Length: 459
Image 1 (cartoon, rainbow, N blue to C red):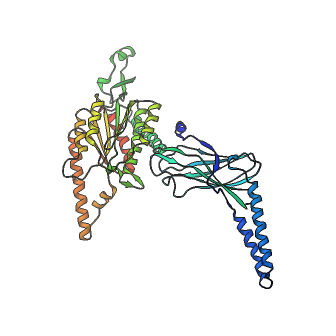
Image 2 (cartoon, rainbow, N blue to C red; image 1 turned 90 degrees about the horizontal axis):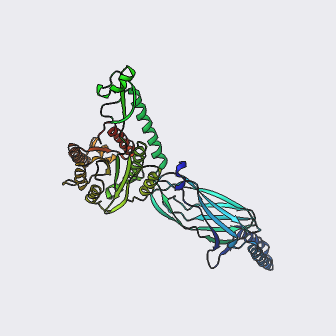
Image 3 (cartoon, rainbow, N blue to C red; image 1 turned 60 degrees about the horizontal axis):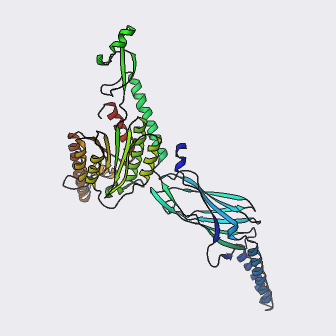
């Protein structure tokens, strides 16, 4: 995303410094040379005086090591840097570049270990770089984050040698920084473009506007068979001497609230991602479609307390604010306070709006708080209750039990599904829209439901 360049973490550079009290070590070739000295053991079996030759060899190697160490540049002559080549996104591979600037007069070979969080990749990246005197060299590695939010990235640890590889120094570059991991931006953008184009093609194929599609005037055109008489512009018809119809477009400047439940139920995982991750991705896709349609978008994410609250707005600035806010929504270990979320929204938003609520339903005998909150909102707003389903639960209910234990599991799954259906039916009876959808399909389902509501003028 070209417009996402501002989301790329800032590059960072720092001069290297000694990493410990004894920041020197022996290189691999030092030990190889010592092993060569064992050749003296052969003739030493017949003449012990050859042991003095081996001792002299070892002393010479030590002196050679000291000379090579003296030729190594001091840590202060090296400047290390970390450059992020793209925004860091959830479950998306992106490249990180490490660079070494060598201000000394010696060519060096450096091994750099970058201290990145384990959620970025399974092992600590290690890059080998050869840097000529007075030059800068780089090396890249890949990260694939498994969690959104802010993550601390630590220092870079450097081991460097001359071309002889006998002695080496250890150094550290202070490259600590906090990096923000965003939702999958490319996926949401791709889904948005596809859904908008497919919807536009479907509308153009009809060659007429549907009843209740919107009542905001767009343009005039010649009358076509199937147009309603109430849409005929009689003044334009009189001027032109033929029937002229008015066309309408979706109402704009409406408000869409994205409400995200970040409680414990959304911490469940499917295909390596949490339900909350899928909800965040769907919210971002819907936000881009709504902003493209001319609506205003707002955000409310909550757990036990309100995590993120973003007032309604539009434009590229609102997209950037949404991305930043969604990146910081984190799942909590406890049940979310749905009542507080509903009261907060009722207090903030007085005018009728579309409230898209991403959540899951607790398996309790009583009516869950999230359903009661949605019922309260439905008196003033159009609520789209989006329940992220458990694919395993549906698969279990569709299976054929073959033992007593499987029968118990099957019966429990059927009871849970029936309970959910009753709750969602109750919401529909009070005028709310409902979706119970698998995590992988939640993004497209929510956007389609939003476009359908716009077509029918339900707001």
